[in-house]
Image (cartoon, rainbow, N blue to C red; front, side, top):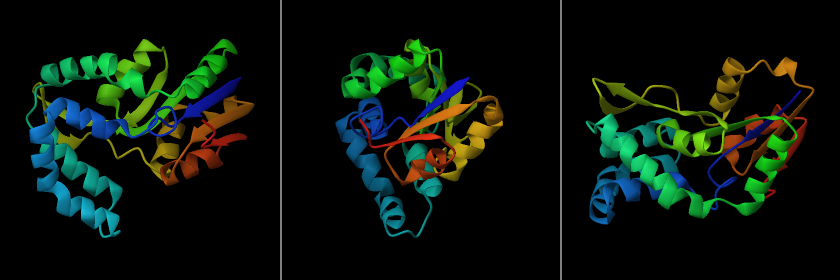
Length: 194
């Protein structure tokens, strides 16, 4: 048995889909205003004063707090159909299809939110491990339901879901510092190969 692990943003896509999603869901004016509201947190992250988890949590709160799940999912489906597929790297998609044709287990492992990536993964019959948003009474709180699926957390979440000893070969594809630990557990590593 063989396993293929793919980072999403920057690996399968040409650039970060999270920013595109925020812009899509908020509109240009609200996007700029909300980003200004959290800009000090983004600066603190850039200066290594707060973690990726903290900065991303502040952005999620600014954009998603009190949004209904129904509204979010409706927007996410449209985003996947109209925007997300436009930034998919053809070479990455070709490699995913090759793994599927070889009957390998293919899993997308991403720091972006499962709450919108799940619609893309369902479309392509791929498994997904990603950061998840908290929901209460049909509304998003803006908080995370899981830790940010980044760096060591990617490996922890993979091992939580998958018994790696069952696989004779593990492929992993990534493009950034957040993928380093995932690449280290693979026999076949693909760093910025697409």
